[in-house]
Image (cartoon, rainbow, N blue to C red):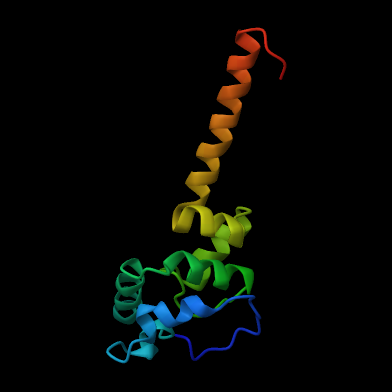
Length: 122
């Protein structure tokens, strides 16, 4: 996976050294093949990887459209981007960034409602 160059230059790519896909026991082709079996193998490996959030964030920030990055395919990442999910949100919430941001928004709304109910200023 790390052999592909997205053209994105990040500030700190040290996380790549900890990526499971960088280990020789994994087939790098799995991350860039279109077959279901290869994609599933890549996703399973990503789900166990300690730097999954950094990887997915890197792919979103770099607008990488090919391959599996952070356990998501190009079309899956495109759906996150279309929903307004940023690389920063992915770092905070991981692949479930949409749900995390929604929960954060709901907490903010709940706090506003409570302030209104108890005479506070919104």
